[in-house]
Image (cartoon, rainbow, N blue to C red; front, side, top):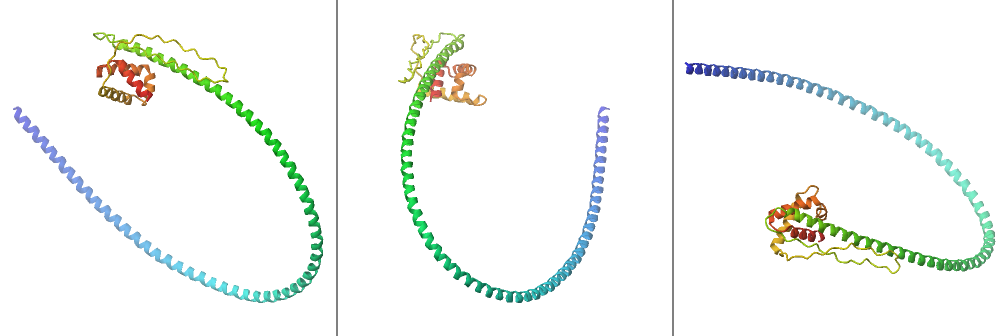
Length: 318
């Protein structure tokens, strides 16, 4: 009984599916027919528009040709009339110019004769005046040059003295500033190095606190006594360096070159994964990042965290 019901249901589904397919097929055929009708309508409309454009274009071209011919004829007529007017005006102008030229020539000859006489007289007077003026200018220029030379020599000596005084004062001020900067940098470097060493000791104790067996306690490197640059003319008092307690250092194993390269590769890989890609010096100053680096290095490489710190300091200094 159940098999018969399933077969009937399957047959109903197949019949419904067949009906849907036939309906979809009929709908596609109807759409294709409508599309063909629309394509034919659009083609007819485009052909009619094309014919209208061709006819309108021929009419416009004929109109433009007619207008161009009319404008050309008008221009030719205007040019002919202007040419005739110009010829008449040119002839009258030539006659007037010839008459004016003859009159100007006669007047010019008279003026030239009068000017030549006056120029000869004025040239003689001007020559005498220029000679006297040249003699006077020569004497005055010699006096002016002598006074200017003396003034410049005196100003040069004064300026040289002023420059020497300014150079000496600048030398003294620069020496004092350099001495102060050197002393401040030395104090800051010693304090920073001591803080790093204390942090490394605390970090090593926190990393190796729960491990079985005892880890050798690293000795903080004693900072060398860096004497500040002394200036003979500086009055800045020397900076007192904080005392550094030197603890006995047990013998620590020296890492092999292969092990040191692996430590360097591990440090570079760890720093590359950090956000904002900090420098090695910034990682060395960041206590949280340094603690995680030492913990992961001690677990992954199985070496003492002090060796990782030494390698990181070497890389940061380089």
